[in-house]
Length: 432
Image (cartoon, rainbow, N blue to C red; front, side):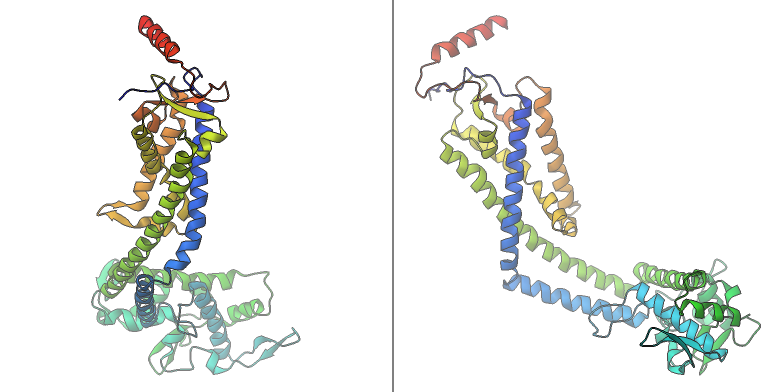
């Protein structure tokens, strides 16, 4: 097939800066349009049977997870039973109950804020202490886990005392108490009643155990609950002890519990399904955006130039200054389509769905890894024109197409420039 000389053959190769700017314009126009389409199509996809099925499956597994964690005692369910209370919420509740239990044991009043904002001293209701119920472990998450739940599970029934692994049944009552409060929670025992005193470990029906602050520390914690926050050290100490104990319990379950691992695996499988839905919807939106902003624009422009190329005043021709055949334009846009797809990574970060990128596309390769690889190639391609005379990027290099500067001067359509092309080619041969 006979080639046609490009009308822009006399023009100079466009600067690398213009080349880079045109690619950035096309990239971000495609990115923004894809995001807009995704915002429209994702809510629509939520009404599909596939999405509803995955959502229901996820809700079921999540409910099972909440119930299991509640059963271990590490964290409790909220009042509606739809979620777990946070560690901070549980810790705050624990500190207040320790303070009120200590006040009750020492038979002293406790501050209560009235409707008028004034604090008054009231007698502690036993229902607000660890003494109220026979099974008061449910009021003390850490005790529930370490004294009631842990030893009932074979894979969890391992207590390390002085670097020696022992089963719960092998521990003396004193070791069980010390394991929880000293080893796990690392409480500052100087704040509590001496272990020589019967009140150090108060008991409820021989089942529940809890620590009691000394009278001096009880008066100190009362100041905190009178909203005197000049010295918060005691509150922070007890709060942090509870958090340490809870976190160690969580780590124990995550590492050793077969039930937890099974639930976690099921949730991960469902999450992967949800991620696939999002990625498929996004891919559809990206294809539509690219077709609209690149392929269709190029077809109707009659010069196969994109919006970015038009804005920067660029035209494309072959290295030999001939008009590129359609198949070269198609390869150029195919490579650009591949490179622009890295916008998916930016999109999910912008949408706050970075977790979607953890989806395993191949057994050991995640969607995130693929997107980072493509983004790296894209950045390399973007700045490649700065380092070669033809101002190639990867797409133009593979098809041997250069960008000409249309703004330099324009050649009327139909003008015969074949002699000039032959002359220039001859000069190039002589120089070689």
